[in-house]
Structure formats: structure tokens, C-alpha cells
Length: 467
Ligand code: PMP
Image 1: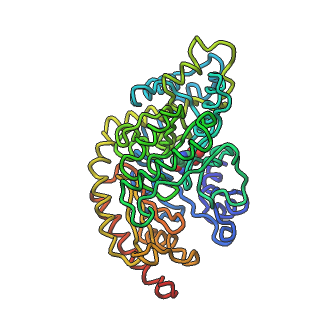
Image 2: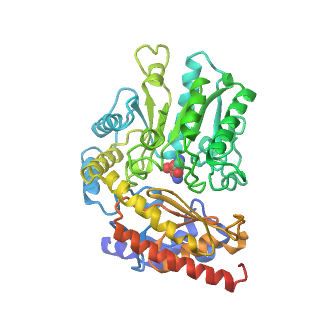
Image 3: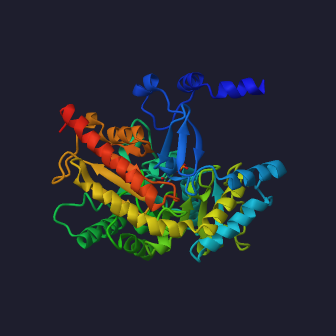
């Protein structure tokens, strides 16, 4: 029976059909899915993944910006198996706890900026952002400021897809035909250096964005605003880079107006920019809350967390907080197997100094990708360290886009995949967000493949009359 089940499990044709007929894939275009079906990834090792047909690819997206320490780490699998055998699950509600959750909370407090010492566990990034907004509202309610409810987010932000996190998200196409809680959220302009208003210098652009925030606060009233939430570098919105000093200045305005500053470091955290946390080390901000997921467990098991400042904790959770239970949390808050995976993941990151690898190889990746700017369709190459993006355009001078039907992002990704590299198409963009263990040699291989893929794309766009 076992043998039969195993064989059936790896029967490519059966798997493909089972998947197509029963698995509702997230973020999938169903107008094409029923014909094309899925690509089944079955194996992984280090920088590689392999599909059910045995084709091997360099993983240029770290799964989904998450497999930071690389694939196939037996140590993590073993730590998870040991914990699952010993005690796979028990509640953390009320006063109950488990060893990995406690150890990990202490470890995160040690790694995080000095004032962030308290951990609220979630199941991933969306639930971290969602829970955070509830905690922020609860905090202001308890302080006797019940009108402080509105959250400032930004257009093109990505904060997840639970109802509240999706409402924070500012990518219009993501919420197409969905509803959002618009009465709770105001979306300000995104910070997008590449597409800033014409004729504005970087510092003028920064002034412009800070002025916009101040104008919104004046209009809505600081008494009605609870928090500002931002990714240090916008990820899914297109790896959008803010002008220098932007986050620091935005935080200062928030602080002056009693508005909490929440950094969504679901992508930028855990090494992608060369540090466990980018907020302080790279952007010189001291957020009241930092949300993490993805690289926290390198995707080996689902896990997210909100790191809460001492100041907030004084209202949420100290002995002085009389009169109520903090009635929020998940069955899987502090899941022992996920926390065991995260602890081992962090141990590996520290032992191999993976952040140092990113700081060493990251600038080389940036520089090597920039060498692709000569391609006809490459309008911008941007990002930082292991968080990079190519913006494909019709006209480099004006930044005009190709028509959607040209599917340029898909074309580049398909051409790269044919040559053994998986990158992510996001509309007309291509995101490159590798596992953090790439060496300079891996960068060279990947960039050679991309070079060929971009040439092939130009040729096919010409053939089809798009350029
Ligand atoms: N925030 C950011 C910045 C993200 O990139 C993501 C996921 N890509 C999320 C939140 C949502 O995380 P999850 O999918 O784990 O819910």
C-alpha cells in the first residue's frame, strides 16, 4: 500500500489532474490555468529546485522571498521532526507555553532593535499585519483614545490578503472584484524613485512625499489616526525604492503626531538586505512594531510574528494592565514545530553568517543585473542586495509601458526558466529575490541566463509586432 501510494504520489499525470481539478491556487489566472495546469515542484536542494519531470532550476525567488537559508537543510527538518515527535502541538493561550516558542521569543528580542522585546506570534505575514492593527486599536482604546483608528498605508503596498491586510494592501489589481475596509485605511502615494514626478530631484521628491503625509494628517486629524504602515522597500508592488531619508523623516512626522510607525519587514527582514532587521540598520528608523514572517523560518514551516516595543507592551501586557484579557491570538500562535524550525534557521544564519554573504554578494548581484540595462526592454534595474527587480518598458526614455497583451514579464520569466532559472513575473516586472546563499559564481550563471532570456524576449516581441 505504501509503495503504491508513493508511486501514485509521483505520477506526474495524475498529480497534474488532481491539482487542476481540486486545488484553488492563490494568485492564479483561471482563464489560463484550466488549459495549462500547474508546474509541480517536487524536490529541492541548496540553490536548486526540481520539477516532477526531473528538470532542475536555480531558484531565483527563494520560494516566495522566503527560503533564505536555501533548500534541503536536513538540520531544520530534523529539528522539526524532533519537536513533532516530542510534542507537536499544545495551546499557548492563557498561561500555557512550549519551549521553542519561549526560546525563540527571547532570541528575537536579542536580535531585534533594543526597544523591541516582546513577540506576538502569528501564522504568517498577513496575520502579523492583521493582528498588529487590532493590537494598535486595542492600545489606543486602553489609553482612552478610541478615535485613533485610521491606518495610513501606501498605494502599491503589499501587506497580505486577510481582509484587513488586503485593505492595507494598495495594489489595485490585487483587490479587483474584492471589497476592502476602506473606512479604516487611507492610501498615500508610494515612494517610487523611478517613476517620480518629472523634473524632481531625489531630495525634492522626498520633501514632496513628507509634505503629502503632513497634509493628510492635517486633513484627517492626528486624533483619528492610529498608525502608518510601510515596507522599507516595497516588494510585491515592484521593489520600489524610496528616496534617501524618506523612512526616517516619515517616522519623525508620525512620532510628532502620536501616530505609531509599523515596519512590515516580512520580505526585508531576516537577511535579504544584509541584516536581520533592515529598519534600524539600513533605514535608521525605530519602528514601534516590526512584522516578520517568511525568512523567520526560511519557509520550512509557516510562522509570522509582530515584535512589539516596550512602550506598547506597557499598555498591552504588563502587570499594570488591569481589567481585561488580551483576547486575540491563533490556535497556532507559537506553534512548537514552526518555532523549532525558526530557531534552527537562525542558528544556521548566525553560524554561516548569511547576512555577511548578502552584504558581500548583494552589491555584486546589483551591479551584475545593472549590466543588463542595455537590453531594449529594460527600463530600470533596481533594488538592494538580494531584493532586485527589472522593469520592462516599451520606451526607455519615457518609461512608457508595453501593452498588457505583450506579457513581457511572463516572456522573460519563461525564457529564463527554459534556461534553468526561475524568476518571478509581476505584470511587466521581473523580480529576482534569491536564496541568500548565492555565491558570485551563482550570480554569474544567473545573469548569463537572464542576458540570453532578455535577448530572446526582445526577438519574440519583435516577431509578434510589439516593438
Ligand atoms: N507583507 C509583505 C511585505 C509581504 O511581501 C507578504 C507576502 N508576500 C505579506 C506581508 C503576507 O505574508 P503571508 O503571505 O505570509 O500572509
